[in-house]
Amino acid sequence: MGSNNFNNDNGKEFARHKRIAEKLNCDVYFAHSYNSWERGLNEYTNKLIRQYFPKNKHLDNVKQNDISETIKKLNNRPRTKLGYRTPKEVFINLLNKIN
Image (cartoon, rainbow, N blue to C red; front, side, top):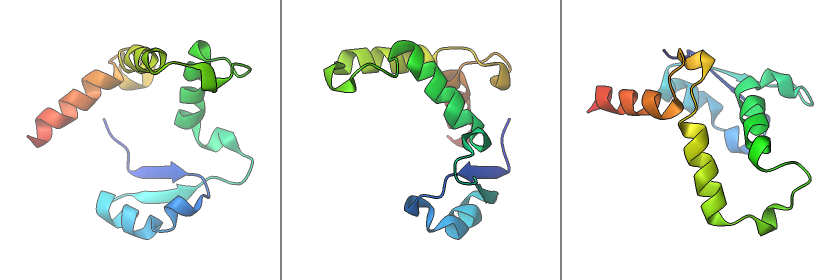
């Protein structure tokens, strides 16, 4: 399971998008300003994170342990787009292929 394209926003961190495309052998697309739905995975991940840290919650008061626990839960949560595998399973699978 993979992708042949890379979608991102218009930030200066993607100034070298041509090099990224070349190294990853993929097409690079930019989202239109104020069209967050063009970055679906990013918005979906934000939605999942908000289940643990609501928008009105001040993140200054969040402990590192709470953040680590949330990361662990999200990485072990099965995803439809991954064939009901977890992100952790997919990542480990990819690591095993390159080792």
